[in-house]
Image (cartoon, rainbow, N blue to C red; front, side):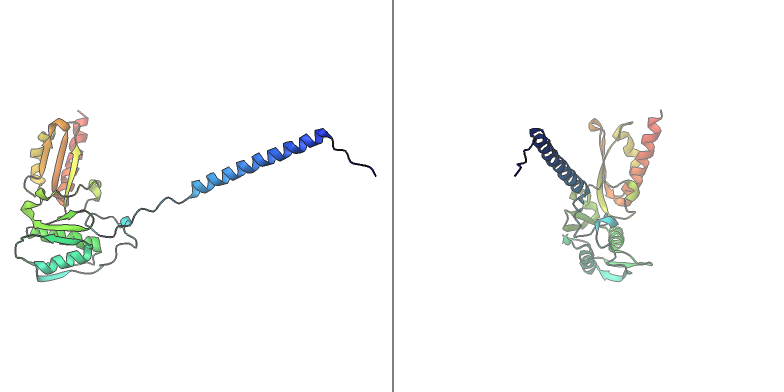
Length: 232
């Protein structure tokens, strides 16, 4: 019987093949891991559980179609209107002493939930009542004259996306090409609430606290002023 004798060189070659195979497997495994990591879906953005006049359609799943109806208030007492506001927004309405008013309003086209809140904000503002968001789960109903002192929420949407409604908000603007105090007389005719424009020259800041429709116009004007001044 003839014994087979292994060539040491062949053994080394086989060992090299085994080592290369392990390295290749490691590289493939690592590559697959990287591929999987790269394809992993990013965490979904938390869906809002409550609604406000500043919500975008993408912030609610399913889309905001819950109301999608008409509003017909013919002398409805304020208490009932605030109950409807609470149901639409999913927020607790916190109220203090308010004027005893009956609301008259009829919408001509179907409204989504957010659109209905924007309409209600506007109608209530016309009756001297401001709705001021308080965190994610509440909204305060206060006399309009007190709205600025209730610290309206800072809304950072571009002015083009701000609703043209009587929804209370604040916005901090940093100006570059002029003193903030110089802009106050120009902005004042566009404001609605008292003491709604605060200028801080040392920090180049304007703090606007008013209804969304008014701040929208003020931001648009400030953008134009900045562009004009930058050309000089």
